[in-house]
Image (cartoon, rainbow, N blue to C red; front, side, top):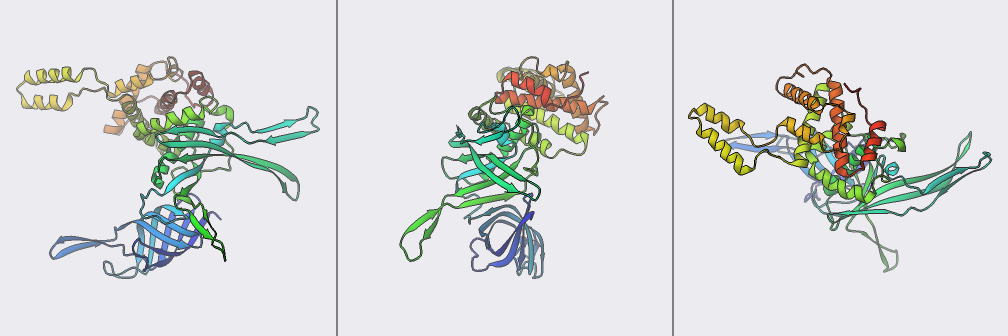
Length: 468
């Protein structure tokens, strides 16, 4: 079955005595919907004056709690899809359909931002291969008469940042027989998970930030869209269990599974990126170095990364839109990494501007100077400085003429943004590929990936047009 159905009763916080019967469904790609027989009042009343008010179905529900056959459920950030029956603004509907942003199965939250979780165990596409664990080996006898395989325990890898502890834990599922009608197989499995533990309990949304950061990291490392396969959160309050006819009690951990729709639909059963095609692995840059550098780097460049990796997960259908967004990433990434570098110190610029303003009494000219004169780099200057971040010679693998690349990108960006045309660009697709490759290389360089590893990736994992 490619979806979950959670049947039970549902209520708003503080309205436990007015539960509604219904079913929440969670599809394979994380879409969460709630259908209630009855429902919650979806109306919002806005008073215009003493005699007139408007009523709409715009009410948002930050939290809905449920008791189902799967236990406790918390649904977060719901909005009405449809409501029928009842009287708008005066009574509840008889059928209410809602969309929820997130479902947490296993516990009730006091509010959506409650710091209720002390740990998370997350699995990501490409993560096991990126770690390259060496605890699974296979051997074939030289004459082919005997094959042997071995799975051993793997030492966890650790990293820390800003009070958070990260562990790459490798789980071994030992060998077992699989009997089919035509054959017998002996299989084993090694799966890596990322365990994140904050210094103090955190909300689910704080763990979501780690999920986004790690998804982007695996996408950058593998060169292929990579996303979250699963996540479970350890609740701070265990369940206390009392043995029948005994005073003895034990506490059982409460694990909460998190479900939400994400841009990239994961396909964990598909073949992984070949190890040789990774841009880098933990053998090139250790787990500790990667995590402790990437998480603050991703936070520092959040705006640029949101757009850049969004293009990887869900590329736009039209080349013009893709090109414009890549240009936005280039400008934003430079601003995040290098700030608004200026040609003049602030005091010198102030004196220059005052001199220009004093040189004219024409109000239109003075207004133009005030509006246009800015002490910051142009888009072209940002591009050239961005391209200088990778090691000398790396960008020449993409383009022999940086000045020409920057000029073309400025013209295309300005043309698309202001006139809806590429202004005669000779090959916009190639320009988009070159710019994307430069952006990837900048991120790899800032992450600390060794230069020789980046050069190796250029020949294996970068799709580039022929150079002019």
